[in-house]
Image (cartoon, rainbow, N blue to C red; front, side, top):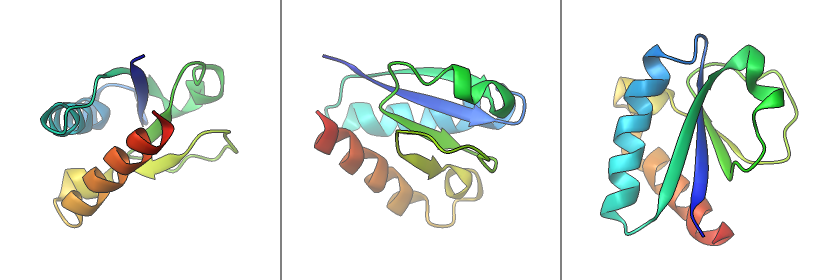
Amino acid sequence: MSQMILFVCATGVATSTAVAEKVMEYCKDNGLDVNYSQTNVASLPNNTDGATLVVSTTKVPYELDIPVISGLPIITGIGEEKVLEEIVSILKSQA
């Protein structure tokens, strides 16, 4: 069964798209079958159904039942590999 990552930014368009592209490529390179969706942070509480984890480029002011990972290192490039590895680790542990 395919897992789903929910990418979040302030608008649900700009930085979440850039992060989604890198994360999805990394997941594919690691043999993971993953789908994704994007949303803005204000809509997040109503959009987590079916999501395995959230990758956000903005602060998430909500308590969620799924892991939330900061996607900012993927934008800045500082600590990017560590975050990508953490995402893959979570996905593999939830498989």
